[in-house]
Length: 418
Image 1 (cartoon, rainbow, N blue to C red):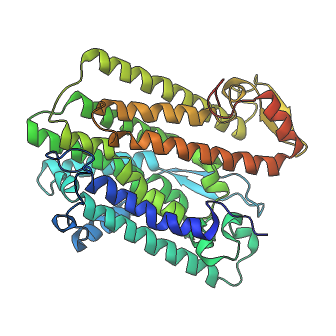
Image 2: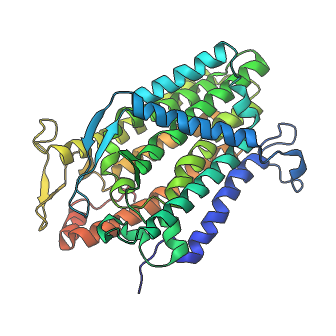
Image 3: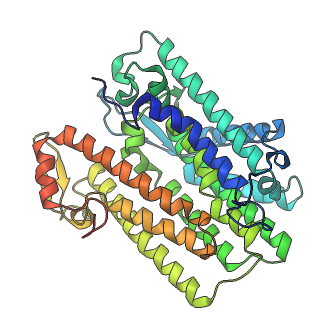
C-alpha cells in the first residue's frame, strides 16, 4: 500500500482549494473597519473587491525576476548541502542577506524619489495575492510536467514523498527533489527570496498606509514590523541552515512548497500589519505592554535561534568548540543524536521557540478580535503536524535507536507538557 500524508489525494485536493480560500477569506471577512473583524453579519459583497489585475501579475513577475538577477550578480559563498539519496552534495549560492538589503534599498529609494508608491501594495493586496497563487500554480504544473517528461531521470533525483504514482498527490508533494535552472536551485530560491522578503515589503507598505492615514506609525505597528523583519533577516543571515531542513533534503518542489513560499507566507503572515493598518486607528500600546511583548519575542527568539544554531553547527562540524561538549547517542547508522543542550530539553524544541515568537507577532493587535491570532492558532497545528512527520521519518531512519532517544528525551515540543 502506498504511504501518503495529508489524507492522500482527497486531502491534498482539499488543501489546494482550501488554502487559497483561506487567503481570500482572511481579507474579505476582515477588511472593513466600519463593520468589524470578522464581519459575520452578512455574506460578503464580492463585487466590491478586485481579485485580479494584469498589473499585479506583472508586478509579481518583475519582483521574482529582480530577485533572480540579484541572485546571479551579487557575490555569495557556495556551500555544499547535505548528502542526498543519490550520494551527491549539491552546491548552493548563499547571498540571500545581501540580496534582501539591495532589494529593500532599491524599493526605499524608488518610493522616496516617486518612481512608485509602496502603499500601492497595501491597496492592491488581493490582486497581488491572486497573482502569487496563479504563479505558484503555473510553476508547480511546469515542474511536475518537466519532472515526468524526463524519462531518463534516475529515481535517485526524485523526491520519495512525491513519487507515489498518484498524479494529483505527486503534483502537490513535488516529484523532483532539486529542480534547477543552471546552478540556481528553484526550491532554495523560492524558500527564502520572493515570498519571505516580499512579506517584509508588504508589512512596510501597511506601516506607510497607517502613517498616511493617521500621521504617525503606532508602536503596535512598529512591533509587528520589527519582530517580523528580525525573523526575515535571521532566515537570510543564517541561510546555510536551510540546507539541513526537510524542505530541502526530503520534500520535492511541488504545489505544497511553491504555494507556501510564494503565496501563503507573504499573504497570511502579513495579516497583523494589514489588520493594524485598517483597525488600529494609529493607537499606541501602553509602555508596560510593549515591554511584555518584547520579552515574549526575546524568549522565543533565544530558543529558536539557539536550538537551530546548535543543530546546524553539530551537523556541519561536531568538533566545533561550541558543541563538542554536548552528550550524544551513537546510532547503528554511524551517526549521533544530541541528547543534551537544547535538544536534550525536547525533541523539537526549535518548534516551541518558533511558536512563542508567533504570539509576539499577534499580541500587538490587542484582544478585540480573534482574526489577528489566526497565525498563532494555525501555526500550532502546523508545527504539531510537522513534528509528527519528523517523528515518523526519524523512526524509519534510526529504528530502535530512535526509541532509545525518545526515552532519554521524552518531550516532543513543549517541555513538561507535550
